[in-house]
Length: 363
Image (tube, rainbow, N blue to C red; front, side):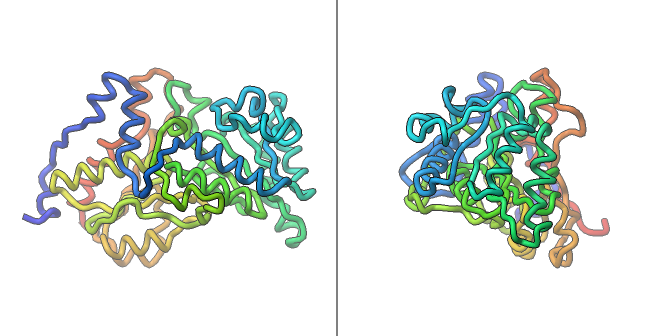
């Protein structure tokens, strides 16, 4: 029996994740995010350390690079991403700020107009709402409005999206928000190589880049290839990565969701349901539509966080409607039992994939 025919029967897949979550949710998510990766290397590094290495390397190579934000210096950063940088580079290049996002973001943008390369850290992207005018109206638009005469080489970075029990005002995902702003580039790393390579590329870019990290991924370790350990390593902005090859269906994800997508794909393959291809977007804007289209031409089915492929040539290759998996359309609950229902995980992705395999266009 072919894998696609077997998909007509709903398969019950044992979930290691559920058992782990019952005992220790934090350890469970860390272990499961670590289980699947596509980097070859003997050295492991946490996402936090990868970001720290990227900052240090770029600050060494270019004296115009500096870090600014709340508690980035003496406290080593709210999530310890900037650990040790104050001791190495001093208070003129690692600058602690008052709690005024609009104020220090404006200072950072102004310094970028003057030729410096600031890295502006927000303790969470939820707080960056206070600085939205500086990001969208000043940083993003000035290059165009000046006829290309004024660059704004600034990097805005910090944790984005769901965390753990921090409720609605600290859990929002801003990928769609900033992904719709002309003049911005937006990246969303998943593993340690993504984090290091994308942050270095952002700092080197001549115009503003938004780096959407994830708080729950900071402490997760991933293998680093020999190339990724080099000070010259960068990840091209706007280029997605195939984390797992497949033939029956394409799953597109970014940030922490890549780990869930990979686990679902491996579970489904082990159960004989399908061989899914998993694409790690890495960049939200510009979006690598070409890689998605190429994959859909091969698999003819798509489960994604983005339906833009419907407007492309990939539509002619679809055997089933595109399916989007999103969080619930509600403010994020504080209660842990409700929070768990608000965001898609491995089991949700697996169920949606099985349903997609049984659907056809026009039926």
